[in-house]
Image 1: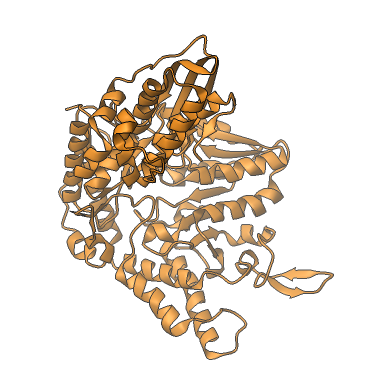
Image 2: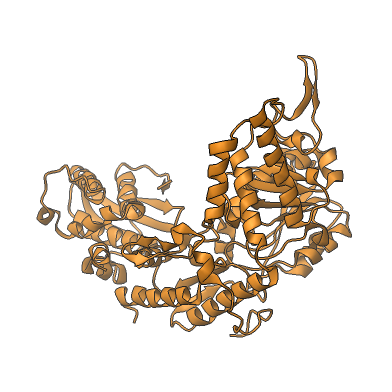
Length: 150
Length: 420
């Protein structure tokens, strides 16, 4: 059970049960769909950008606890960040869940995102954690095509 | 719970599952410090020592390329390899060894029929008929064929418990349908289709029928002549044999009229740069060096299965399925997907508020292997309005205790996700 607790940390379970910013944004600057055909996870990420700053971020959709919590935590972390900062967090998060933390950041610096460090022990679930971030990145770059993990 | 009417009450459990388990070395493995509970048999089955020994023996003492060789080993390998056709013929009660075509698996068998019989007989405006519970491997080859030919793929729908609507199936049978392709047993819902009856219905319209038997052969005695199937496909690795090996059975009359599948060695009688004369069946469909060890391993698996009384085996598995149904459906918030009156092999389920992927991860940590996802049957998921299911699938080496392990682990899943 200890490995499971490392994966399903309280923050993740909480965000899965009560996802934050879980709504459709009618006046989004951009929105992109993300899809994991393997398990059917499907999310839409909405961004509002003003002068290169993410002033609002929300999402909708359904999927496993890891992907939903990842989208939810991401939405709380990226609010108010610049485009460039969001790009850096995208890279850092990638490394974190792949267990290859190259940023030199301590887990504390990852804040709430540190809850996803345990995902690296579950290779089959890395895609679940990353899907919302990939989708966000495409929205940031204003690419419209659906993101797929396959 | 009043489904599964064909299943008798679960009393007859005097099947020697515990003894049988000792033939399967991997079943005594530990996973995450728990004894392995392997409930992913619809994906692939484990292999008994007898199969492993046969493959090993072949490579150790008999390895050579088959056909045409004049030396001792080649003749030995050819003899052993060709004898497998007889083993398979008896296993499915086909009429003749040359009706047994060696392929890589069920998927290739279906593609072979689509690419040969299909290309020759399906033309623009024609139809191919399948059902609503098919695996992607019995959808996509026909879709590709229909696309190429300008033909139409028609789908006989299923009802809410996962049974094909036979009236709808009947209404779709017409002169336009050039072939019907149906699963014997659904890999997601466990539904046993009344294929014998469906074949009779199709034959009344002169329509040949391919049966995808991948999920049936591990669980029941299949008699292709009793079914009167025109084509029957299954995979070795789902019947305790090696991967990369499978069987296409076809009636002589149909196979004889079909063009070859792939070109190459072994499928020819003579070749000049001007003209090639193709070999007879079954070799016409078997280009290149075959999976000799795979065939020999599969024959060992069939020999292994033949030691059991088919009825006793089937009855034992019904006991497992029925027990799984009863115990799982007693869990609050759990919904079983697929409640056909006759089922075999698999029990799919979902838990309220918990994604199947999360169920799979927690169960894995308890040493329990199940499959989660769409099971290569996305149209079935769409029909039930769900993205995925968790699927426990059984073989004769599973036990009632393992079903209790599964149930206990599902309670753990609910604890973790706060749905106690």
